[in-house]
Length: 394
Image 1 (cartoon, rainbow, N blue to C red):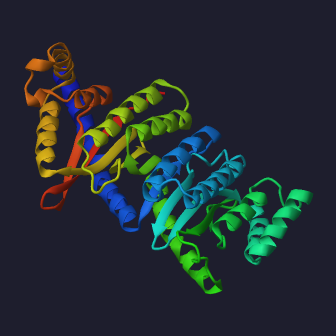
Image 2 (image 1 turned 135 degrees about the horizontal axis):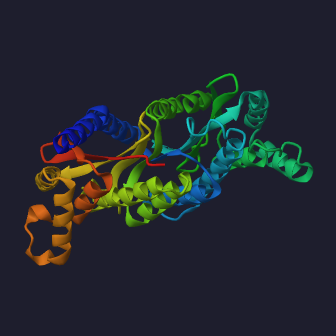
Image 3 (image 1 turned 30 degrees about the horizontal axis):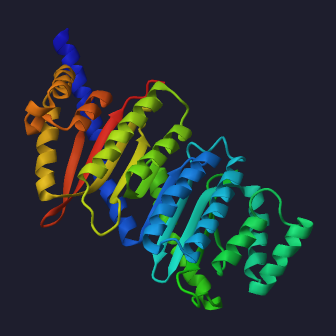
């Protein structure tokens, strides 16, 4: 009987590795695609007031790295606030589909512009009204927008629920550019409502009428990315620079994203270890404070969760990490628990393979082998991807 149990356990681990091995290549593809298209921040998941605050903090940190505290940074921040409020307002009408079709928020830097893009479900019946309001805003020049703003403040004429009032007027005023809206049909009840605007990095770069087509074409990359994340059922997605501050914000997001349960606690604990792994082992590409990387949580068809992190490492780090992970994966859970206790009790007298408590912790909490892959980027640089599986016990 014991041999049968061991065989079943081994078969389950092998099955999980087969199911999710394709995610390694997809993760690297997502990371490189986002890097090539100059996305500075991408979040896909559930939005609430508290989560939006954390998202703002994460995104603003990335922007301040590029711009510092400046008038432009404050303009971008204000537009982000309005965009996130727009997502939250529409979510109230789409509770029955939010799990399958959560929203997206992205910051992209292209040449002399910053792009702020949001995407969320909206009732199909609201689309004609939204189009009409956005068309009205886009038809006005700077002075006319200012006058409309005053009129709405005085009469409340277009300030109804849905963010199509003062919020959109203010986004247009602060950006100095037109709003681009796109609606992608989901079913007979809902569509995705994408809203994008761009903010010139330097004064004098406000668009002319001929530039509107460029704005619309810039939205295509976001829509393709969002589709990929939806198809893969990625519940929480973050691509950007990882720091200890980001770790705390991401932890708050996942706790706000899911109901408190044993599974959520395990997800939170494993997420901390995986992001610490990025911060500790990740290779910095430039002078940015954080480590560039990717982290996401995907729900599998079985209901279980796959957590995946990716970051650059040097060839020297690759060898150290690879040896440790192979050593840990060669042991069963009882052996790993014993080794974990040994290391805690005698940190000064353990060999290099048995150090790295974070890896041991991941192995124990996931109850399965740690899946990993190294993709060669250059002569001395690899993209290191780590994946764990957490069983959904709810």
